[in-house]
Length: 121
Image 1 (cartoon, rainbow, N blue to C red):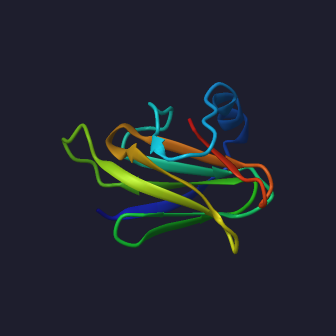
Image 2: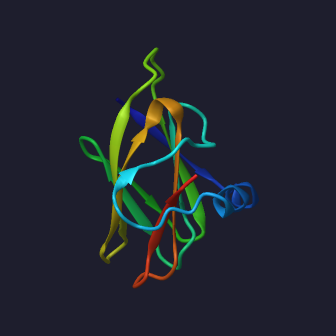
């Protein structure tokens, strides 16, 4: 499905949401999200750009301290699972996770480029 990107600066809202939803590293399935249906929001709260990849060539580079949102075309489906892999720009692999885009997904990275961590919101 086609996705469209938009920058977002919802730092206060995202930081508040992140405070209660920390998931450190490891692969798994992201929990229910505060992000609207058919959207993937990725925030890079570390001192590095976070690069995320999904599906057949999907990519989003999120500069340090910012959020970006990818939008999928809505359908009547209640489940649309997408595997996301997150990397430090010009660095190593952080982790991967499966998210249900039909329900919306929020992912964030933090820490430094050498000690990056990851959680969902």
